[in-house]
Image 1 (cartoon, rainbow, N blue to C red):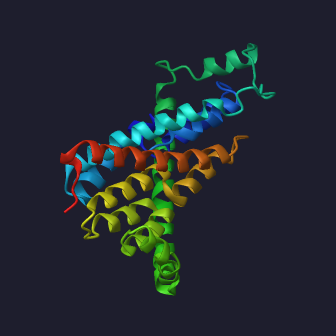
Image 2 (tube, rainbow, N blue to C red; image 1 turned 180 degrees about the horizontal axis):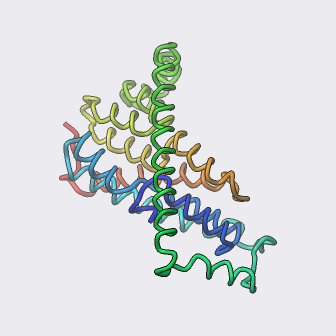
Length: 258
C-alpha cells in the first residue's frame, strides 16, 4: 500500500498497526523506515511524463525507488532486533472483542465506508496543506535572499565535485518540498543530464521536510520514534540515487548526457 498509494499512506498504516497492537513498537518502527514511499502516479505520471516528458525516466525512477525501499527494509531488519517490546499486547479476550467490532458486515458497511471516506479526505487535506505551506516557505526563502546565500555557501563544494552550481537552489527547495524541487531540477539544461535524474531519485527517496512533518503528525499520536524514519529516508535517497546511477551506466539507452 505504501508503494501503490504514495506518501503518507505507508506511515499511516504502520501507525494503525501499532494502535491496534498488531505489531510491537520495534516492528512498527522497522515498517515505518521503509514502507512510506512515493507512488507510481506521482513518479511515472507527474515526474516522468509531466516534468521530464519521458516515460522511460519515470519507469527508471520508480524501479530504483522500489529497490531503494527494499534495501532500507533489509538494513532495518536489525533495528532493535534483540529487544523485546514491553508494550507488546498479546491476544486476549479484550483484543479479540475489539477486533470483532472492526469486521465488515452488511449491518456496519455504511459506517465502515463513512470512516474510510473521512480518513481519506483528512489525509488529502493534510497533504495539500503541507504542500501549500512549504511552497509559501520556499517563496519567502527566495525573497529574503537566503537561497542565494545557500548557493554561495555550497558553490565551492559543487565546483570541486564538478557539478553545475545551478543544482544547489532546487536541491535546497526539494529538501523542503520535493514537488517544487524536482520540477526545477527537471528544467535545468545540463550536458550531464543524468545528474538531473540522479538528484531527482534522491529527493524522491528522501521525501523532504514536508513529508517528514506529515509523518510526524501521524506518529505523534503513537509511541513510535521518528528516528528510524529519518534514518530510513536518508538511506532510501542514497540507495535510490546509487541504483539510478548504476542503471544509467549499465543501460546506454537510459543515459541522456550530451
